[in-house]
Image: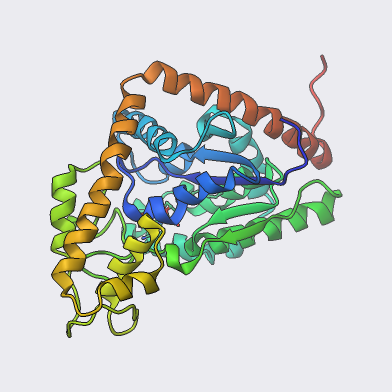
Length: 337
Ligand code: ATP
Ligand code: LTN
C-alpha cells in the first residue's frame, strides 16, 4: 500500500444503529470521495462508544451495521482501510502515553466533554469520557495522517492532537506528523426537520425531525412531507429567516448534485408542499437502494467480519511501527527476543 499519496484518517462511533442523513451527508459521503485522492483509513470507534454505557449485544450489532452502511455508502475496502478500533490494540496503548502528556486542565477544557458531562452528571460521567479526546489523539497520530476530515464539532479534538504531537516531538524528538483538520463545509451540516436551527442528531428530543437511513422509506417520506417550513411562501435559501426551507433545499441539493440556485429557480412561484413532496421522492430514491445494499452486507456477516479483519491487519502495519517508535522515544525497554 506504500504510495506517494497523503494519508487521511477519520472515525465514527458505532453507538447508534442507523446513520442519519447528517452523518451521511456530513461525514461518510466525504469519506467516499476522499478515497479518490488519498490513502484513507476509516475506523469504527468502538472504544469511544463505551465512554457511555452500551449494551454488549447492541454494540456488536451496531458495529456491524455501521460497517455495512459505510460500505453501502461506497467506501471500497480495496481502496480504503476500514477497521474496528478495538481490533488494533495500539490505539489504547498510545492513548496511555498521550494521557501522560496531557494536562488535567487542558483535558477539562474540551467543550464536547463539558457538554456531555453536564448532561450525565458527575456520577454518570466516566473517566473514559474525560479522556475520550486523548484516545482520539492516539487514533490520529498512529497513522501519521496529513488530514483529518471531521465536522466542526471535532475541531477542538484535532487541535489537541496537534498540540500533543508538537509536545511529544519537542520533548522526545521528531516522531509524529502534525495533522490538519479538514473541516467539512457548512453546507454539509444538516438540521432537524422539526427544529431546523438544531443540528440533526441521534440524541434529538423527538424522532420526528430525524431521518435515519435504515428507517422504512415510507415513514421517511412522511417525515419529509411533515417538515416544518417557515412563514411566508417563497422558496428561497435564507438560513436566517427561512431555516426550514433552507435545510430542505440543502438536503435536496446535496442528494441530487443540483445547485441551491437551480432549485430556487425550479420552485419559483411554487408552494412549500411541492418542494416537500419532491424532496420526499429524492430521499426515498436514495435510501431505498442504500438500505438494500446495507442489508446485503448484513446478511453475510462472515464477509463483513473478514473485511474488518483485513482492515485491522492493514491498519496495524502502520500503527504498530508508529507505536514502537513512540515507545522507544519515551524510554521503554524493548522486550528481548
Ligand atoms: P450526537 O448528536 O448524539 O452526539 P450525532 O448524531 O451528532 O451524535 P456523531 O456520532 O457525533 O453523530 O457524528 C458522526 C459524524 O457525523 C461526525 O463526523 C459528525 O460531524 C457528523 N454529523 C453528525 N450530525 C451531523 C449533522 N447534523 N450534519 C452534518 N454532519 C453531522
Ligand atoms: N470523536 C469522533 C469520532 C472519532 C474520530 C477519531 C474522528 C473517533 N476517533 C479520529 C476523527 C479521527 C466523533 O464523535 N465524530
